Length: 173
Image 1 (cartoon, rainbow, N blue to C red):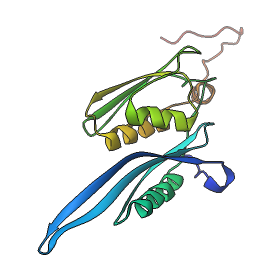
Image 2: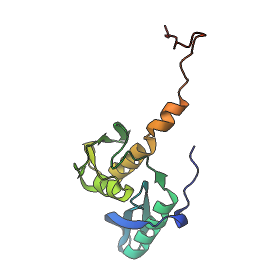
Image 3: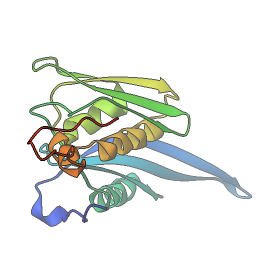
Image 4: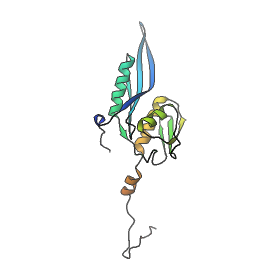
């Protein structure tokens, strides 16, 4: 498991993805409260999302921002894109992320685009499948970014092929 990222060491910018007004019917009438979803990132491979709920909008946004700073993840970048293709399912939301050639831009919708921008990914192809719920799509995107592997680290973890006494790489079979 990766070590926790200290938000104090990074220059983070918060962005509101979604604000929801929730009403609860009580005996005396309706009680209003607000739910906020915020993405924070440094534009250089660190990104996090957080949710906050409160009776006032600014308090909900502040809580969400604090939660996002607690849930930062490091994204392995390959130049201006992601190292490999990945599909992640979270609830009914499925998110597909594909690396793209330089100059392509961020081909994404709503909350996926905001997460990609906050992470500092410049070129990526994405597709939202299943649910269009902004909260679940953002969470699925973060999960996909968390599951990305750096190609150099992946190669280092693999077992080297056995080498015979003559110096040839033995075939496995």
